[in-house]
Image (cartoon, rainbow, N blue to C red):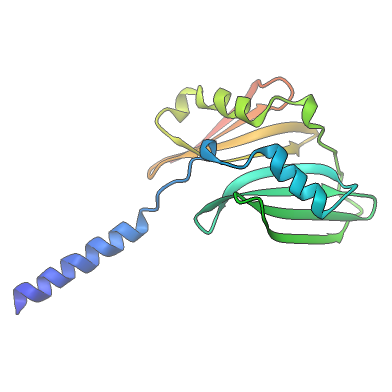
Length: 171
């Protein structure tokens, strides 16, 4: 009887341990292109200026979260890898917030940003798990997150030049 209980205890502990180790999703394997996701965003909200793009994990799947604005509102659309709108939201613009339109042709591509960030020594052997293109302190930047079970690194690049601005480590 003790052997059976001990065996069951081992199975439960191993099962719980396995549940805590989720496999990291690699954003370089995203099957939907930025252009396709943007088409879905603009077909959902036409005549809206782009303000941010992010690829991140949501419910164990990669998704695009795209933000935009017009004269009176700000908009968010979450687009799945299947190119479907998972969530959309619109709300009134905040008077005190600065909005900057992103013009993608002015910046390096997301693929180039991911490639450059992967060359940073602190990201060696880590998986790129999310990236964003956004405005920070008046500068348009790519922020790329890399991680494994023990370490997380965020690399920030100037979106126009691809120059590395800073690297943040979180052990």
